[in-house]
Length: 180
Image 1 (tube, rainbow, N blue to C red):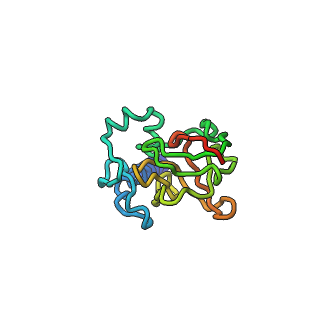
Image 2 (cartoon, one colour; image 1 turned 90 degrees about the horizontal axis):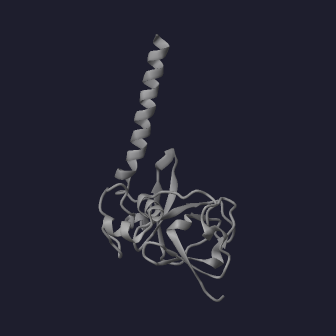
């Protein structure tokens, strides 16, 4: 009987910890992780962020597909290897699907073998970052600096010259081919 009680207490504690971690992001959005993060997007209706492009929730839902809305506005992640942009190899520019701000050049794209479009650097003044403590780990979230849309995460295991891997959701971007 005692072991059953201990099991129930541990299970309850684990659920409480999980709930605290998932709701923590709503409160953490107000404390930026870097100078660029001061424009961090709202997380679950936390403190209102200000961006050049602001829309109501209804306007975002009308503009974006449900999958794009989930990624850009709810900080979701698309399934790996599901985006056609993962296999996009033409010369051009990748832009935020929320506001059309150009965020990455095809010149910095590389195949990370992760299943998401990856880049070793964004375009200048295109993205901002903040600490992301979801899923029980600390990562660096990348979002569009103009509309706050969630693009993906950046990791320090990329190629030269930066050593960074901007692992982006293809749903969060559009592609415009351009001559080299």
